[in-house]
Image (cartoon, rainbow, N blue to C red; front, side, top):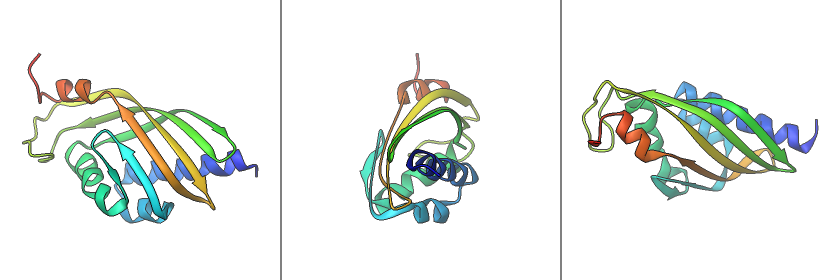
Length: 135
């Protein structure tokens, strides 16, 4: 298996674990000192885990891979991200509303683990769709 295919496989496993809400499996895919950066924070897993938990449990976030591109051990992923706000999250009560948007994540894979991960999404669109802001 090429470095590119092996790196893509790590990202596919990350998406599967995220969609299952399996935070232990997510942590196992990360290097011990993995840097995680995104709209809602940055840091090591212990700092990001509460954010991911709220996205998974509160917003019901699911990622559907639309495209994976790899060059060496670097992988770019474009997703269709969906969810429904069913449990309290980020200091807000659930609205029952759903959302759909494009999200992008960039990964560096090292020794079969995620060493760095950056994520971006249109959080303003997400908030509007979930009924968290007025238009």
